[in-house]
Each structure stands twice: as C-alpha cells, then as structure tokens.
Length: 206
Length: 162
Image 1: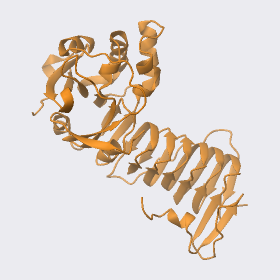
Image 2: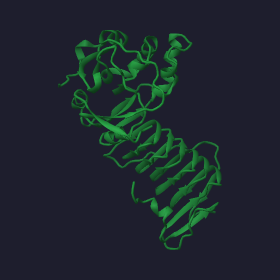
Image 3: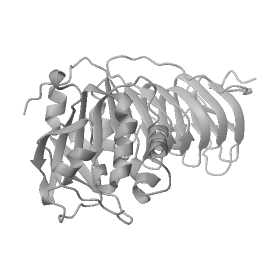
Image 4: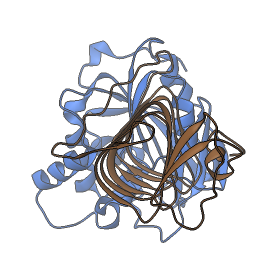
C-alpha cells in the first residue's frame, strides 16, 4: 500500500546497484516491502519483473518468534515469496526488514532466498547506526537511483531487533555487507553482495 | 488523475452505450458510433466476458474479461475474481487475478489488486493496494493473453452480444 505523505531520502548506495546492471538485461526485482507508487514508476523504465512480497504485513514481523521449526519457517517464507522455480533475483530490496525479524526468522528468510540468489544478486537494506538509535516505522520506495521515498506506515510499530553490523553480517549467511553509508536520523544503508563465490564478485562503482 | 479516457464513462457526452443491469447512478447516454458497455453493481457474472467495446464494470465477476484493443474500467464497487486482458485496464475496485494490458494498467488510489500484472506501462496511484508481481517491458508492445479460467460459461456483451 502506498501512502499520500511521502518524503524524499537521499541514498548514496542505491545508484551503485543500477550502474552495475547490463542495460538490456531483464531484471528480476524482489521488494520485501509494500508496493509503492514511486517504485513502480521507477521500474517502468526497465524491462523487468517486479515482485512485492510485503513481509511486513505477514506474521513474520508481527509474530516473529512463532511456533514451528526452522524448516517450517523456511517453507512459510518460500510459500509467501512465491518465486517461480529457477528464478534468480537481480535486486533484492530488503529495506529495514532486518530490524523487524528476530535472529531465527531472519536466518529462515535468508535460507528461503538461497535458491534464488546468484553471484549477480545485489541487495539493499536499511538499519540503524547503533542499537540505541530509533528505527522509524516507514515504508520505502525508489524515486530515483539516488533518492528514496519514505512514508509513515501508520499503526503500531512491531518489536524491533536492533543489531550491530557484525551481528547482522553473521545472520545474513551468504550475503555480505559490501558497503555501508549513513542516512538521515541515525539510519544507515547497506549494499549487499553474495559471497559464496569470492572470485566472481560484481564490480561495484562507488 | 485529472480527466482521462475513462471519464467518458462517468461524464458521457455522446456515444451509444449498452447498459447491463443498470441502476441509479448511471447517466443515460446518447447515440453515436462510439460504443461502450456498463455493467452495474447489482450484476453478478460467472464466466467469460468478451467485449469488442469499452467496458465499465461495477458488478461482481468470477471468470475472465477479454477486451483486446479496448479499455476496461473496474469501478469502485467492482469485485472480481478474474483474469483481465484489455488494451488499457484501470482498477478502482477489487480484483484477485492476473491482469494483462496491451498499453497500460492503472491501479487507482481506491484499487486493490492481488495478482500478477503484465503491461508495457503500469501505474500505481498513491493509496493503491497491490500484492503480486509486475512484468514490465517498455520497449515492446506485446501482450500474452491470460489463460481463461477453466470450466466457465461464456457471456458476450457489446455489439456482438447474443
């Protein structure tokens, strides 16, 4: 869902994602958040498949420590993401989802994504500079490759799981935080790359 | 949005319109060669609608809408569990199903869509709700007709209605 009150937020890392992509490639983009008009408008310029998972609206955020084994949680994510077999994600927009999932749930998400992540996959996330910094309850979109849109989600903010970059790095398994930059209000943005194949890293221009 | 192609449904100036299940709230429309069909909120349809003219749908549908090269507007009271294929599709109501727009698909601020969209251009207005995937290709004006739901009856509306 999109909100009527959107603000702009400068990004220093998002542009690097689009600079590395071949122009004529059909992109596969997975947005973990809600569908935002700005994001849809932005990707209208690309030949792409843009999927909105909106994990914030599911039980994963509201009841992250629910019943079930790890494999059951992985299956729940796979069912919710509904990605066709063989699909490889080019861009995964996590936004600030990492801050709303407990450790086991986040690890289940990363495992559910595993079959769809290749050495070309790039991720983008938002977190807080330190664990005591507030994480505003926003939903995000892309206005331009250097500018995000953010809007208040409304409602009650779910429980937050602020983490250091080191802790987050451990939970992200095969994803590596390649770059981190400061954002407004004590937030940071992360650029993620896949780190299973160290010798085939994409060349990022910063 | 301001005045657009769909305003002619709401503020008709001329044109022949076939009304199906019309009720209060729709204006009578004069006659001309421009044809469009309105289906009112009190109408429930199960099956396939094939239209060779523009379609304004306010009712309930479980099935398929095919209106290649024409415009389909699902009004605010429209409630569909259906696949839609049309030249231009605008959603103001609720649709659960896949949408294919030859030219454009617009989900308005009151629209709620759960399904997959394929179109060269897709617009999501502020306030719109969407869950699913969007396949966009601004370089090609191609459309893959959606597969009609199985075991549905066929209803013809428009000038070829039987």
